[in-house]
Image (tube, rainbow, N blue to C red; front, side, top):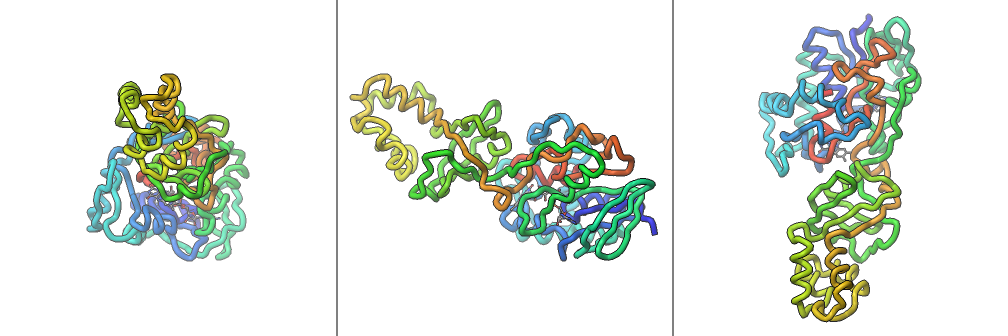
Amino acid sequence: MIYDAAIIGGGAAGLFCAITAGRRGRKVVVLEHNPEVGRKILISGGGRCNFTNINTRPENFVSQNPHFAKSALAGFSPQDFVEIVQKHRIPYYEKTLGQLFCRDTSRSIVEMLLSECRAARVEVRTSCTINSVRGGDGFVIDTSGGEIRAKALVVACGGRSFPKIGATDLGYRLARQFGLEIIKTRPSLVAMILSKGASSTLAGVSMDAEVSTGKAHFRENILFTHRGLSGPAILQISNYWQKAKDIVLDLLPDEQEVDLLEHARNSNKTAVNFVAERLPRRFAEIYIAGRYPDLPLSKMKPDERAGFAHDLKHWSVRFRDTEGWDRAEVTLGGVSTDELSSQTMESKKVAGLYFIGEVVDVTGWLGGYTFQWAWAS
Ligand code: FDA
């Protein structure tokens, strides 16, 4: 039998693509090497899958071509996905900032996708190892379950993060095999390791901050770890991190620098106590103590006091590295968007070859955006 489409990868993008093609009457097979589909969906959102973000805009994605995602995102909105979730009576709620989570477990999303696959007569093969893929007139996929022939091949193998649940680099290898360019990949939406100044005694302390680099800025929590920083604001900025550039933290985003300086000028508190009134005391005692004279702020030299206020608003940190593939939620980079049609996701070089989801150089922010890209692409 020759399938209309073989889809490699039974994750978010692959299953949703299979459903869409199956509903159009196409004969579709999904090839998944894990014993079950959708493992990343299962562990996502702390087990409650943040399956979309109702505020999704093209600006919430990072790519060498920021316009590429527009077409797919316009063609399938968060509301379109929510309608399917509602049809399956899956309870959900908005946690914060437009993020929709399952009220019970992520498994309900996987079951929903599998039920839609059955309705669309999609064949799903699990524990299926891909040995090789040949192109030419259609595609021949040599698998552990025998040879599969298909008119179209959709590569939906996802990114490289979380190898322990089955992530591989097969998508990138296939792209290379067919002569497609890859934008260098790296772990992202990930905790970061400080170049210097990490303090394990601070691990566990968290606070609200505005974190920025270049034009990108996020206001959410930061969390001190044994080796550096984590928390939603840091994960967000990791999509924009460049090794040779500092990340700037505004530790008091609700106070203007001039007001802060004015308060400091009139304060009889030391720098540590002044900061401990506004931020966790452990932070003040470890990071502030020793940096400034142990004097009431009102008695400090004006330029020292100005430096103190400036530092709190522009705390520059340099990261050495990310915490790596085992901790990253996504892969930054991937199959170059120059190689694909933004309307269809088909390769411009190889007819019938498609790349969708995270394997493509389109990376969403934290907060349900990467799943929205998986469904939409
Ligand atoms: P996905 O990884 O879902 O699917 C790829 C599939 O291909 C997998 O089933 C894999 O086993 C299979 N595969 C890989 N190599 C293969 C091979 N060689 N042969 C056959 N099959 C192969 N996003 C979000 O929007 N909200 C959230 O709450 C979270 N939470 C979250 C938590 C954690 C811990 C992680 C690691 C990630 C998230 N994400 C997230 C990100 C989200 O999970 C991710 O962006 C999407 O699953 C990407 O969908 P894809 O279908 O592209 O890849």
